[in-house]
Image (cartoon, rainbow, N blue to C red):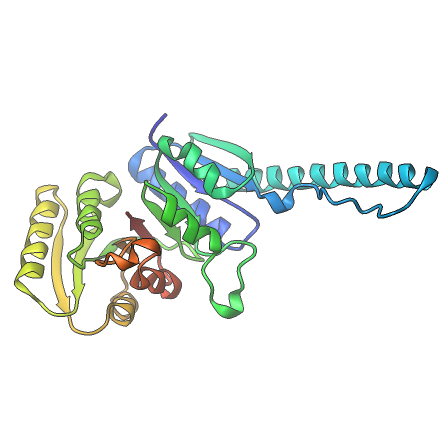
Length: 284
């Protein structure tokens, strides 16, 4: 199966939202859902020798006890992972999805995704994971790493699920922005949704032509679309538009129209994901 919705779940408060959004995508695209929980390397048993310089019989006894503790801890971590997957499956099932599979993986989450993303049409992940520092408003470190590495669209779920009827597409004239428009035109996920393609900045002839091309592509696919050029800075204006006009989802290229940003997620992208209270779909 090369058309799965891969949803990453963990013990964070975002996981329920990830499940609801994965189910919503499944119902609109008729694609199966695969729920994945990755046991990170730090959750694996410790390898350090805690017995220190103990000698004679006490050392071997302590080594046995430590080995037993490691074994118990590994079992508990595995049990917790399976419990997370069971809960996630129940949520997606209640939302009406019939084709659901679960997978417990070990190792690094980005390596796990790179191995299986060939089977995916989209990767759904929460904005922050279990280890995120909410007080500082940081994005989950795994989210940034996955967006950099993934070749499939990454759907970043907001904290709570809400019905989605309208989409804001951030268009900066770059290649990934046009790729985002092309993706919308070909995906059943966006059928029937109102789409607004927005450029923040100055309306140059190049931008005007790009927006006209974007509208034509969407209209040809039967998607109601309008375009807009808004003055100001993308980091603030896009979030303001979403808030004031109640857009249900944002779609944008994962990188800004700049070669320098090729090494990191574009600053506008990072700010949108951090500040938006709606899902953000990122495309490379």
